[in-house]
Amino acid sequence: MYRFRPDYEMRARPINEYPGKSEQAKAIMLMIQNNLDYAVAQHPHELITYGGNGAVFQNWAQYLLTMQYLSEMTDEQTLTMYSGHPMGLFPSHKEAPRVVVTNGMVIPNYSKPDDWEKMNALGVSQYGQMTAGSYMYIGPQGIVHGTTITVLNAFRKIKRSPKGGLFVTSGLGGMSGAQPKAGNIAGCITVCAEVNSKITHIRHSQGWINEVIENIDALVKRVTVAKANKEIVSIGYLGNVVDVWEKFDQENIHIDLGSDQTSLHNPWAGGYYPANISFEEANEMMADNPDSFKIKVQETLRRHTAAINKHTAKGTYFFDYGNAFLLEASRAGADVMAENHIDFRYPSYVQDIMGPMCFDYGFGPFRWVCATGQPEDLVQTDLIACRVLEEMAKTAPEEIQQQMQDNIHWIKGAQENKLVVGSQARILYADAEGRVNIAEAFNQAIAKGEIGTIILGRDHHDVSGTDSPYRETSNIYDGSRFTADMAIQNVIGDSFRGATWVSIHNGGGVGWGEVINGGFGMVLDGSKEASRRLASMLFWDVNNGISRRSWARNENSLFAIKRAMEKQPLLKVTIPNIVADNLLEF
Ligand SMILES: NC(=O)c1ccc[n+]([C@@H]2O[C@H](COP(=O)([O-])OP(=O)(O)OC[C@H]3O[C@@H](n4cnc5c(N)ncnc54)[C@H](O)[C@@H]3O)[C@@H](O)[C@H]2O)c1
Image (cartoon, rainbow, N blue to C red; front, side):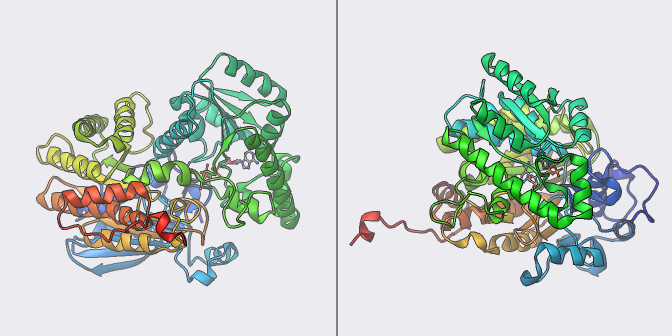
């Protein structure tokens, strides 16, 4: 694994420091190195960027070969990447993507976790998560923004101010570690349990949690005081999350919002730690006695769910955070199914919050990276994006004013929140029109020499990029949520509308075999071609998903797609005609 690991410093360099014949290829090299930066990646030596096993490559030889190909390719070639393996350079043309990435794509019948273990051991497939294997991870900022939007909207959903409200969850890892910070930005009290002492103390020293408490009685006392004083505070509890749920039930501590971000997409290999045994004992059991470990995990999941059920009976709003908690709890036989025995009794955060409030309107995690590496460029782009959004907000319809204002607020505070780790990157939730307008304004600023090259992208966790029945497409109720046409259509459509690189993955977030997800990267260089590409591709990249969501009769998507058709006469989407309920009655 480590044999070919280079000894130079791993980080994104300014784009002009990369060797090569293609600016686009240089931008991809920059993004690859950023995904492997020691400050950014979770296990950089193992080429894992985030999410426990989200790999950029399977080994360092693949990394070296890929960088070599990128440094020699021209804009008349395309590099194909098979699960980290650079298959080679193929002749193409200037308008084609420079790189096409596939990760973990296997025949559906061979897409079970055990199959993955075998194929990964053989070196023929890898788990790319979402932005790990597609070179589009921008450190914790992306997660902090998405989590803040989720927590804020969850409080809106229960019609309660975050002030003095209690949010209980778990995990201080790669993505889960954003929860306490998001809780602070949203303005509530957050208790986040974490079994790993090292991670807990690192998060504390990084300022991602305000306090660490190791004793459950002390936690009860501290939370009682925080509630009385309506404090904004984040507390890392060093211990098992099940103990928190059970103790707070016994002590009658009301939890307003509850969730979970243990890595249950990976339950048998360290994603979820059983209760009543120490972290060290659990690690030994996992290696020496995997069958007993599995039994313990499932016992804990049943206890965990039982405690959550007691709280929700008392009014807690619990949502699944896309970590396969409800799925694994159901597999463990926990009391987690709805009365129809098909759905879960709790919604996923996309079903209730992100889906209807953001994705259905086209709002999603748009992002950009300043390829010069200059913080001044990021300041300039923040100002440009803010100006564009403020202008749009003046005439935006009532239905999307809340999202517009949330994002203007976010971008205004972005510099102050100091969220940049690795490349000079920014995330912002924007709809199709916002993404196109912001990107076009960047392209014009590049043409005028005000800023350098910009790399656009997004998380796969977006309007159109991901088909995932228990997460991104969980608020699709016409039966199509188990299909994956949208994600596949999306990547194909992006590739011929001007993306610089595209990717399509099996797995990501909720686990291998559970989701198909894709994304893109696009280089803006101030040219007319870039302007044409961004308008065409970004419009498609969002409206593809809105059209599918509207066909599923999602009300907010119907609104959004009709609005898009009014603005773009070449768009003509099949619209469902809603039948009045009384016509269906006999
Ligand atoms: N944040 C997001 O926006 C988001 C979105 C979708 C999905 N997810 C999912 O959230 C999960 C977490 O992601 P991550 O990158 O943080 O993974 P991670 O593995 O880095 O972190 C999970 C943490 O949970 C801890 N943990 C496990 N069992 C525990 C228990 N019983 N009690 C307390 N702590 C426990 C682990 O020690 C670990 O530190 C993944 O499944 C991911 O796919 C996150």
